[in-house]
Length: 308
Image (cartoon, rainbow, N blue to C red; front, top):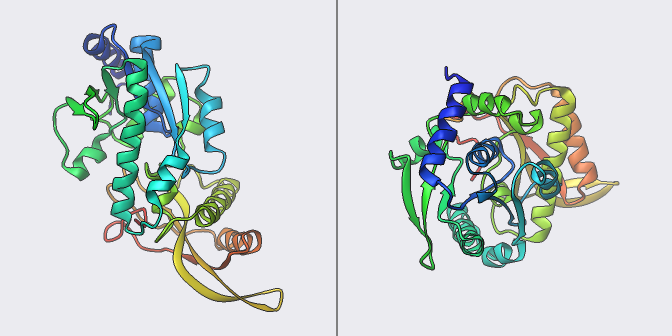
């Protein structure tokens, strides 16, 4: 197990040596990985780090306000609303890999514009060990990224050798709020990979509301510390239902809740049936477009944690 104090000192020392008095930029999502990386880099280079939160229109309910409130006084923080740009490019796209690629491309374009505006030469990333192990990524801790319009940034990854539980220990040592440290991971493409099929403002809104209900009830039950992730998926399947003695034809929502240590494997634990029923009742009552709620019970492997 790492010594958090030693790790922080070494990380800050390494970044000071690598970045010096030049400017760096980081994509701050509000998750523990990017949050810890942001605070570490800020301690190393101060306001020469610009922490950028990009709202792609696919974030959780209240996410933009939450991240801004948490970090606006702690970091050199910048919030960018690029939701229209992302959603225009995603119109009509159903394949999850295509969604991921498009979101990645648009994000890089937005990020490059900001990096040019602030004069950044380095890109700090919150990459952790499972990210590059699963993607068979580069072993080097520093490498260059050539952006689409010619800007080249040197990549710095201060926590790339850590696993999620270790990142949380570092976050605690840095004094980050418990809500950030223990926050469940959220996919970079956001709700785009939790809406199966073609995206639309209506579907994104349904998925966002369903996710909020799941989070509220899991926290109320006190399971948020033991579950790795807990969320709702809006499928592209419609199911016959009855609402107010009238036949209805609405969406199927699937609940996904797993335990894990590092996301390499995950399993679905026994869950309180009363909580599952309450979530189901709330989703079908509070979201008129949904008629049916199901529970995913598949472990990783063979399944992945996210649906797409």
